[in-house]
Amino acid sequence: MPGSSLWLLPPPSHPLHSILSTLITTTLPSLFLSESSSSTLAPHFFTPHMTLTSEISPSVYGKSPQAWLDSIPFPPTSEVHVRFKDVTTQDVFYRRCYLRVRVEGVREVVGIARARGVEGEDEVGEKTRRWVEWWMEEYGPHVSLMYGSVPMDEDKIERVVKAVAEAGIELSKSADGEDGDGWDGGVVWLVPTDQPIAEWKPIAVREL
Image 1 (tube, helix red, strand yellow):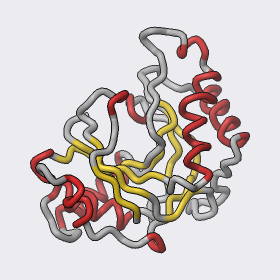
Image 2: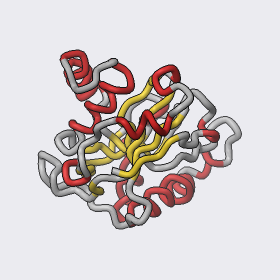
Image 3: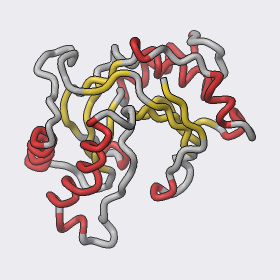
Image 4: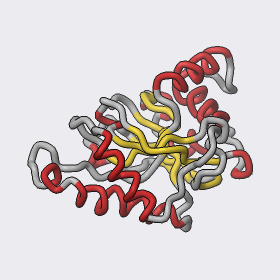
């Protein structure tokens, strides 16, 4: 993945931080043992997060990534609401299996991340608004559970849904997704995602 990314993580003290980590690193790999034992299909482990934006050029933050991250006018915790809608899949490596997130609770934080990180706008302007509309149609906010190149059929998705429920995560039962589990606010990481997945570590961190 070229450039760097801004991620939104659950607060470290939030139960979902450990629940999602266990799903990603232990529970879900154990459901698909043939893949986990394959040298070519072995699962990739990563910190649970929702990507706010990616493809940020290192020239944007230069030698002061923390100062740059601190300068972004993110909305306060009271205006950032990550809510899980359902489990789904796409035939894309980084979205092999993921939790869809309700758009309305994260639209503002995604917008300012994109504006400052990629579009060169101090505030959310026309370029960023156009991108957000495109992004909602093509990708939408999500929290990945599994990366990989092997397609997920309906049976596999149902097994993941069951594992998510057994872990204590309640998905939305309404059309707008407002009643699903999730978290408010969180921690933003700036991560050089042009490195191998195993080396994805933050170079700047900020709590909302």
